[in-house]
Length: 141
Image (tube, rainbow, N blue to C red; front, side, top):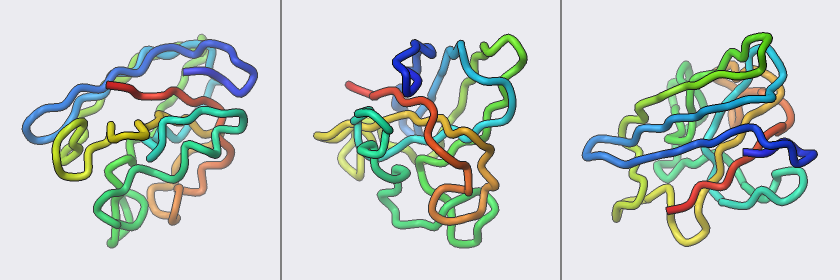
């Protein structure tokens, strides 16, 4: 992952399984506080990170764990970065296909892991009212 000014922020790895995927992120140099962390539909971290598109959502759900119509398969829990700016997180993402036949995350255009400036409220569509994108990492096979 990198910040908008090209500072290295660590590594995100994702691996698929029968019932979902496991994501492990080893992060550093992040601003302290609570931040949204999502998987986005396109593996493109061009300046501004907008070309990464919206959240990965092959099932057409609404956003957020607290939304009756949710959640996106790319929605993940917020991260809380300590004063050191470094942390490691691990998530199991049920139902997420990494390379399978039914709506895989890593299709022809890849995917991106994005960290936002603010926290995800787990309900506001389409992105949890989390603010600007401050970090991006392209996910590849």
